[in-house]
Image (cartoon, rainbow, N blue to C red; front, side, top):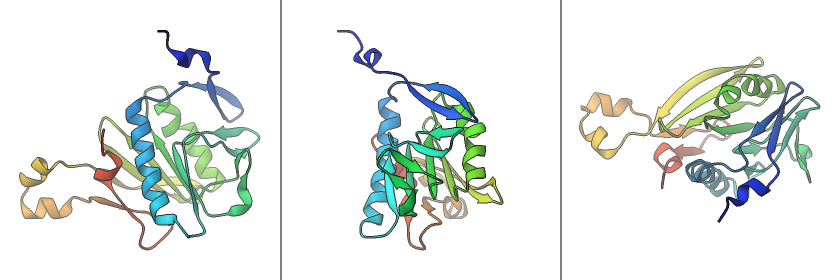
Length: 188
């Protein structure tokens, strides 16, 4: 049986007016991670004004920047339209893959910051890590890098080392919204 993905049109993103091809379908690990993040957001945000979105929703920052992030939270209902998000989401998550890594850390990240995205997460599946950036005057500044530690790794640490390990990411949009790092990588 041939790979059916070849029959689908390629997914594209537009960065600073230039079109970039994306892989037609992400790997299973990529999808599981983005789904885990979406589920964490959706569980917390039920009944609250901000709305979580998963992979496949277009973000139109302006005429020259159009993206498909892996997950996001939008708190301004006025930018949610039938064909996607028209404006800056409050939080964007990009799960790195070899084909998108350069842009996710470079031009795309810069465009998100300039547009006013408040919080930006870069998730690295191979390193099982999450970098959290906050927007400071149109530039993303790294706040913290969170790394999943196994029970074995934690058991080999002394009390001081174990206490320094941050196992939950605090989402800046709400005082009590935390995402467990291990939950992000669950089933991967």
